[in-house]
Amino acid sequence: MKVISENRRARFDYSISETYDAGIELKGFEVKSAKSGRLNISGSYGLARHGEVWLINSQIPPYQPKNTPLNYDPGRPRRLLMRKKEIETLAGQLHGGRLSLVPLRAYLKNSIIKIELGLGRPRKKSDKREIIKERAAKREIKKVLG
Image (cartoon, rainbow, N blue to C red; front, top):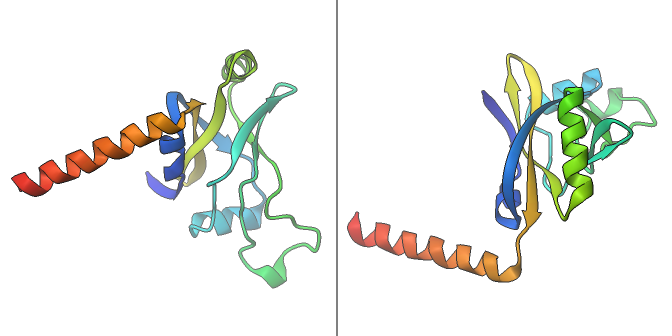
């Protein structure tokens, strides 16, 4: 598995309870651009509506800017491909509480672009501070020991 793009901030801002893998519906020139590593999923999120899951606010710049259609929008919503049962459970969980669907990383699996989605609850500022303190303590211990 080759990781194309990673949303490292998501694991810090959200406590992830479950992860899902989904395919993504792209146009041909978007596939070439994404495979070359120009897919940006930081700041994007997932939405479940009308029995489909959508990736909102992800950016895929054109592979060849002069060769793309005139009305191309790099930040357009993209449909995520999942099983119907998964979509139903995901929609129920998203509708129920303060959960968010956050893309964690995009990767290649058998030359197919996949998105790993995390179902998570936003962390409070105090929780984030604790995580920072724990990381600093681990770094100090590692520095002293080795």
